Image (cartoon, rainbow, N blue to C red; front, side, top):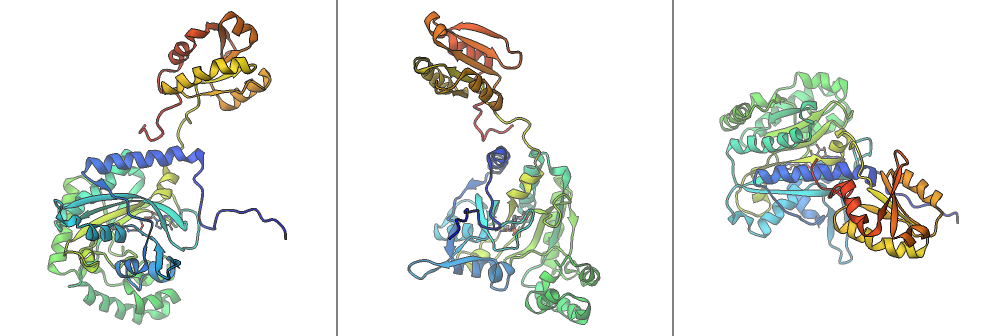
Length: 432
Ligand code: HAM
């Protein structure tokens, strides 16, 4: 049998060292922003009973019907890798009685999600989300707060100007059924001009047809009845107040009556943050209100609202970090005695937070200098036999090639002075 090299699964990707600085920056900034608004981290598991998503997200959604990674464990129980975090966070909220905390209960979680979607640029089968939920309050000011957190995150990342906030209200169980009927009637009348998928959606999940990107369908949808004309008094007032508060916060938005989302749990406010820079996968974040969902998961009648940010898509928008952290110096011992002398120097440097590399004392100086060039270190320290005898080492500045002797007992202090504490060893999560 030919040997086949094992590769990552289709639609699943490695985050390589060249990119991790951007990931760490995104995580660090989001934690800072979320915590500044009073959100606390919760870490639910990555898999749950399948029933949770079927009930929470909705049986007839694409996610539940076509996209879940579902498997039986050895006891025959049906489990699913989470396709999103909201259902898990609310399951934990109910299971641990978090509703007794002061409301709204503000929670966030960061981690991988899994959807069996057709992979393409910006769309993966394992992807990562920053997910934020505010539970137990239905005041429209909370909607504006949650959207405000999202916009603050992107402002801090320097991306706000490149994104547009789409805002809509999709009504509630009081007004949506009548709208649904109107829409179905309209779509049926125009069925001949719709694609097969939209015709199928007309019967199964008609609001989702509004989402179709095909030009022929778009033409039909442009003149479809608008949900905003069909809102009941309460939903209309709620939406007007969300808009008023967003304006008070100077947060720009575009009302998008055709914005529908792929989950059954949403009511009233829904929103997406869109970019024109990533082709078809243009949403970097999406969210909305889900009053009724906690109750559907056997909890109290607590309303809620939240969003999730697609981290891969944000990382694609972030500029590469100007400079990767490089070590301050390569310490080059020539021989084992020199190695024994330099090992504790390296250890002390690292204790002080300065990153250095050490050779093993077995390679030629030329080869070690070559390595120093590839590491891009600004300095090397050379310790050969003659230097050892004199009790000194040579510090060479790689840029100019100049070198000078330094007494061995001053070596650490000299290097620290050259690099300043923290050089090359900045904690990766530090926000720059
Ligand atoms: P969602 O719109 O399905 O919402 O996902 C949020 C974001 O995750 C999307 O805007 C996109 O950036 C990213 N995303 C989704 N699928 C993929 C994929 N296959 N590959 C890469 N990125 C992807 C939710 O998940 C809701 N749970 C949000 C929410 C929280 N609503 C209320 N609370």
